[in-house]
Image (cartoon, rainbow, N blue to C red):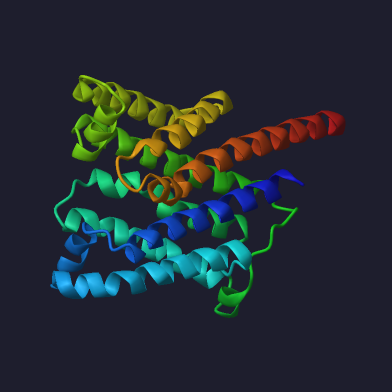
Length: 264
């Protein structure tokens, strides 16, 4: 399997994880969702009634992207991912919550870019196949997109650590840390520093470390651990896919250099 195909499947699985995990919270009627419905003036009773429907559609679209990905659904998930993320500050949560969820909308966007984008209305309903032939320019665009996505999700999570988000402090306390605030500050500084490194000069060993960091730390949420971990599939997928794009762009640069030498 070529690198382009590996990246396709990583992004595809990440999209499915993100929306299946998110949809699960609708099925189990996560109470904090009431705040997001309230932005539109929807009361608690109606919100609880609507949650399973919203969650069901999320799961359905996640499964479709896993089995038979379609460009129209990928585009919708980009829009839906941005919309649901923006609801958080609109409901009174920090702006960092939007940034931290960059994987939710950034990963389906990267998948669309990798597949050549959308050329026409008819193209919207064309399936997304794992192409073995992706131009170096397209791969470079995908890499830039993923750099920004990883930068945002790490910055957002680091920001939430620095402002001592209650959920994160509870997470550190549940792990036995006696000073969760200090742990949050150290984690936040590390993640923001790592985010800047990824944006300015990413290197693959750092990305591998960040991939392990994310899939490990997201396991320790005090409630709904499995669903929380699955929902953040976009974060893991973005980091891992970027790791592969750097490998591919490096190989392309080496091949181009060799070609130039032979030509000269």
